[in-house]
Length: 428
Image: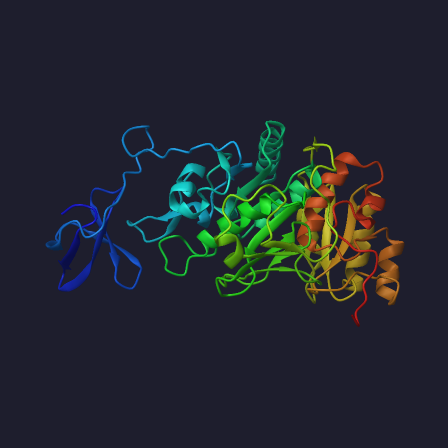
């Protein structure tokens, strides 16, 4: 049999029927089943019957420049979008030895996997790293920011960063502080890998490219806005949280509607639109406009910053592990509280020169340590109110301000990249 043949496979008294797919493993046969899912089958001791030779045609994906290698054509009338890959599910494939999803593809593979990107822009592909989201590290944030800076400096009209979803909010926050940008920087990913019928990779990639052509020169996250394939939401990188493990619309802007929306039905038929002219991308609030800011980069961070979640009855000894940190974000209860037994520990940290800031475990609202006695004790101990900054964003922010601001305490209370608001209005 050859890739594209429809076959029936029998192995250990179990029958499979489907289309033979190209396989990177000579010991395993890969079939596309009629329900849309793929399956990997050990060739030995399987028997195969070819039902329809050449039922489907597959082009070679030879990456070595031979026949069938991907070619990216250039159209002078189109904007240039840089696709930067870090790995993750959007650029992943299935390992048919284990059945697990692994990050294997580079940016050009994404173009081959998402033909709908053709005709929307001229593309430059760049791989910063090829890791799963959970393996992201602060030093990779710095490499990523440098790569984005270089692409914009080289003339990119927008940048799309393909990233695993589990830690996307951290990386988007990091670039929000590290870069001043005159063009959009759009993070996107997928909750479900490309081999699954319910994969969200195509729509997210297309909407991210259209957002990168928009007039909003900020760091954004572009992911499904609902469980249907109708629109993507555009979230500010510093105000976003992944709030579901597996739904396609897992990401939310905390406390508000998303900054913008990409209407997939509109942009799907709108390939070839100019920079800033896409009617399928709309924004609900003010944003930093394209071309207003000068490109600038500041990647230095203090990585020795910790995030600790307070729990009832927590032993002060739990903080021993972070006693040598340069900075600490505490995720407290309600308005920003910990038990009274922990206040002396935090006070001693501040006395020793550590910057300690308080956030809340609540999904919405802001810290206010002036309401209850414990909060006032924390303020007297030198703990900083981080306003309504999300704990994850506060962690990244403190890493950055320790290297770039003379008064980190003041910086943690002000909005540097839209991460906190001037006031919360609970009744609105």
